[in-house]
Image 1: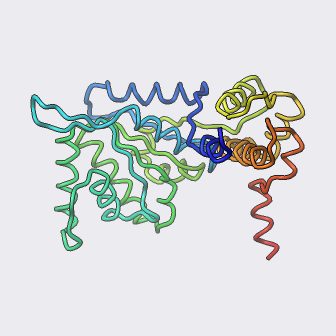
Image 2: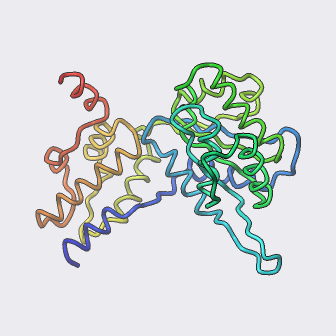
Length: 281
């Protein structure tokens, strides 16, 4: 295998099944089977930035692709995932849904007409779960716009009797709390930072099993694994990046595995140090 081929494998996206993610995906899947009611079950997925929220959502979406029924000549899309606009803007939110569903729209289209089209399209596609990632963006607007945006979510859930999954940083909890009626409908699920335990070691083993090296890197050895955990600050996205950079360094320097000393040679800056670097400018 050439260096280029190894690096391509190292950089390729990887999904790691860890227990908390498996449990949450199982719970998200159960939302599709819920009977329609006036008060559907909703989930608020909360975690620090780069700690696996978006990857988990993408995995769930990939497990529930749109399907086409030749018998009825109809398309079905059980799960729709969009990102909340940078600020609580109803029109831009509807645009995101229409774009995701490849439905054209006119800039001049009135808001109520756009809302009607989105509602009908989600109903026609038999959507069961609507995911809104980066929901903490709601806090970027004034209180009035925040309430209006959350009312849109409540409207779609009530009208279509579908479950909502909102995801974001810890600020997402504060965003949802701005509307007592909607906050009572959400059950929080937290993606905590990783700590030094057997679950973390299993995670490292899973990462290592996907590396194109002939020799074992022994990432789970105490000194090695503790150092990765420390500089990653317990964030799974950072852990993945450290292993990726270390692996590429090993390949480029003709090494047959990752060694602990490589961690001091890669160009990696821990998340908290990045902030300090900017403030020092």
